[in-house]
Amino acid sequence: MQLSIHTTFTEKLPADPDETNEMRQVNGAMFSYVTPKIPSHPKLIHATTEVAQLLGLTKEDCTSEAFTAVFSGQKVLENTHPFAMCYGGHQFGNWAGQLGDGRAINLFEVQHQDKNWMVQLKGAGQTPYSRRGDGLAVLRSSIREHLCSEAMHHLGVPTTRSLSVMETGDAVLRDMLYNGNAAYEKGAVVCRVAPSFIRFGNFEIFASRNDIPNLKLLADYCIEQHFCYIKTDGKEKYIAFFQQIANKTKELLIHWQRVGFVHGVMNTDNMSIHGITIDYGPYGWLEDYDPHWTPNTTDAQGKRYRFGNQPHIGLWNLLQLANALYLLIEDVKPLEQILENFHTTFQTDFNDMMLDKLGLTIVSKENENLIHQLFITLQETETDMTIFYRLLANVSKNDTEAEALQKIMPAFYQPDELKEAVLETWHFWLSLYLNSLQQETKSDNERKEGMNKVNPKYVLRNYMVQLAIEAAEKDDYSLVHNLYELLKSPYEEQPEQEQWFAKRPDWARTKIGCSMLSCSS
Ligand code: AMP
Ligand code: MG
Image (cartoon, rainbow, N blue to C red; front, top):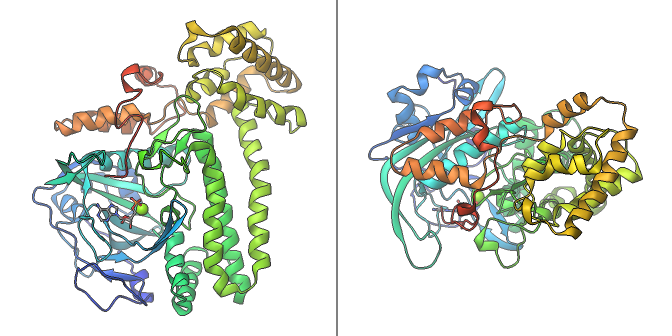
């Protein structure tokens, strides 16, 4: 197993001089050196060849002993120095102070084909940032992270990647529902890969301490390493940097809304400067279209991170980053301008994305209204978001409203119990839609092809990953493998996998892990 190690982060940025692994406030440093916990019986559950290849590894490497040893934390590669990063964050709207990599350990950076990748273990034990946590991760949350990050990538959503998921062979104590019923679960480690794992919170921590030299060092490092196309100097450079992050964040949020992904914990420590999805915790997929839904039981009261609120929270989080970067810019106007611009362009970009989902190309007041009416209509009765858009592609511009309605009928959870008023609303919306289709020049087939490229047929429904977890708990990893393969081609018809193009089964409606999750992972 050959890896081309290329260290930048720890070489260019200040380390915590204290190398003990004790909980503490770390001042004036970006990271602390740590050693991963040695797992007692590491066992590979699944590795992704595609991600291995990004790092210059082969399919054969993935099944080697060395692979299991390195990516479970059992063996630290020569000349590499694992470390945990220091960052802060706003959690659920409040400044939470220092957080940091409490259960993530960066192993090393790899350079391959002109790209640099940070390779990080999640669940490899305590660090100075673990606070009261054990630094470990359980099998269920690790499978959830592994499968979902790869599923998101293949959906075309920017994300951290997942190289592998392994059992550690060690038991981990968790109170899954925070109700005093703690139990031992299987421990696991995921190996994640990304350009970097730098978050908004990495900047916020220095700003909160008024540590401007380190704030500047970090911004300069990020620009040089990851935004090297920014060529301006002085404060202009940091304004351009913020503009880039705002653009990328906006694109990410539009993707989430497109595919029906709910992150669940959009705290600023879970927001990547690269605009990639990071930290898969109590996330979920919208099944019934309900913009108020959040899978995160920790957020059940305020529902701050509900599906429909994600764009607003993205902007709120960018405001926190702007407050931090302000210390390098000392001019509030350009930052305000960028935030304002985010707000106005979001609506246009979002509408463009919605037109794609509907197979329309004409930007008009009528189509804007059509989109607006759709969101109202979708909430009239329980309607499966993924199935709805996929079936809508079968509508022909010459259909009557009744014919079109028949085609989308299987997306309703109770198709036999639809009230007259609901049917009327759908008739009304379909009349608008058919009217819009009439204005378009594309053929039905062309439109369908286009729609099927943005409306996935298969997503990682909450119950699907739960089934894979329950089998894996019994040492049967076949469903993890099958779902990974299925979700590699989410837009393709896969006739042999048709069972996954189905509404959430009834048993999953209120089951823990399927419709609700806590942060305890
Ligand atoms: P999250 O909401 O999962 O992104 O985590 C928020 C903070 O808590 C981060 O600093 C994590 O590193 C830390 N954390 C979460 N779970 C654990 C754990 N089991 N042990 C130590 N730290 C943890
Ligand atoms: Mg996190």
